[in-house]
Length: 127
Image 1: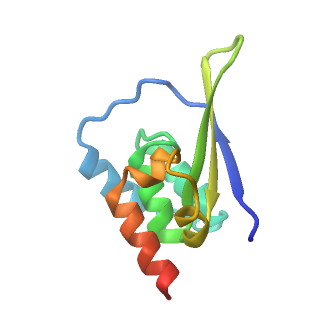
Image 2: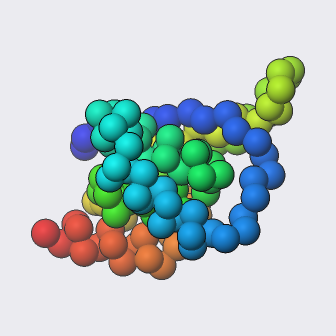
């Protein structure tokens, strides 16, 4: 089993979901054009690009971009209430490879309830 990547992000709990498709396209464009994002680790760059257009790292838009661009899939997301500070919630996202996601329990709803992620994982794992 390979190492599972974990990232934590503290963002606003209620982001703006308007113009979602345009913002997804903008995040993709940022990844290919902004020098500081190009120089980053791919997972960190995707999370940062998504944050710049208003998505959280645990949002479907970010999770699907992570899967498509890095081959990393959600293995679990933990929501933690913070006792104080400007942002009341922190999310910890565990990422694994396609075969690890396919072997994850059905309780991994962030993966299993997204048909596009499951199909992509099956195609990648079949290679």
